Amino acid sequence: MKKVLFIASTGGHLSELMQLEPMFSHYDFSLITEKTKSNLYLKEKYKHKVSYLVYGTKDHKLTYPFKFLYNCFKSLFLYFRIRPDYIITTGVHTAGPMCYIGKIFGSHIIYIETLANLTTKTITGRLIYPIASRFIIQWKSMKELYPNGVYEGWIY
Image 1: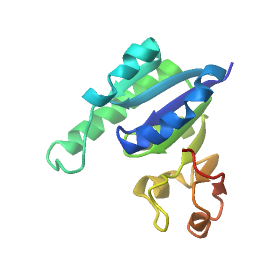
Image 2: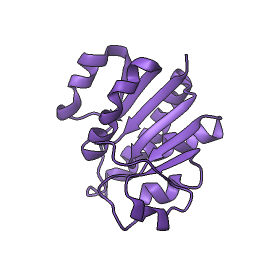
Image 3: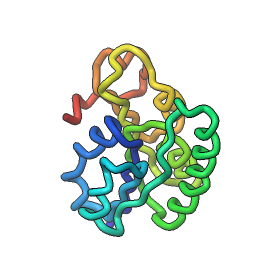
Image 4: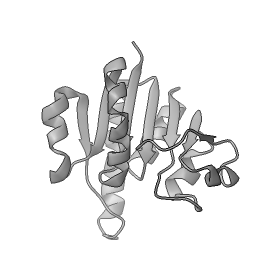
């Protein structure tokens, strides 16, 4: 059975990713997000299938670099524990390092650009686009920005 890692930052990105929840039962899956009060239920629901990274926001300019660096090292550890064949993500900063780690070690990267952007690229989208095995866009208009992107409609 294929190992699939689903990863996203908390909030809207995680909400979008959870639209793929029906896929979980078809794979040996793992889920990674940031640890916040709003998503602790995931650990109760999926037990050992869920791992958390430290919540960090770029609004906290002094602590964010340290949290980001910590999350990079923890992502490396989690990658080798999980060893996914595929990494599926809706972004954002939590997912970037994991995608690059996965690319280096042979995982297929499937990136889903957020539904929130109709006319501009996200920073994570820009970073992951060159390494993605499949780059999914949710708006036809985004094809101009991501020519190799695949339009498959909304995940909602």
